[in-house]
Length: 103
Image (cartoon, rainbow, N blue to C red; front, side, top):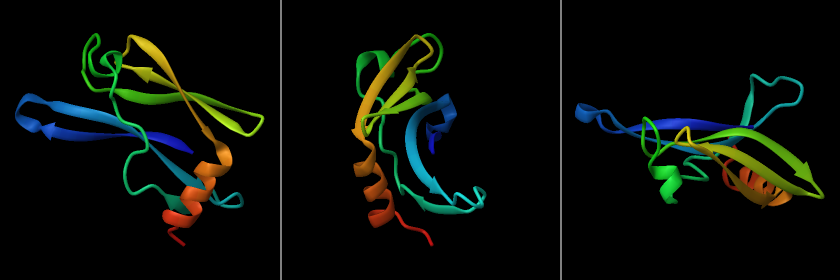
């Protein structure tokens, strides 16, 4: 599962950053988290991810497709555009299960 999280950088001026993380859920009991990245896997870097209509520094997953073993992650950027990131699905799963295992 891919998700977004928000970190408050400067509370006084409501400066935040939205990033994307990943986790593995148990197939039989999806309320049980098997593995979760301790930090984000993607953060705003490009201009269109850092500046937009309302809140800067925002990316959030909107959908994904796996084709020929490649994960295509479509993500929103500051409410103005959609980005695309790719990774081998096996690479992401191996990273989660080897480096981020919870139980």
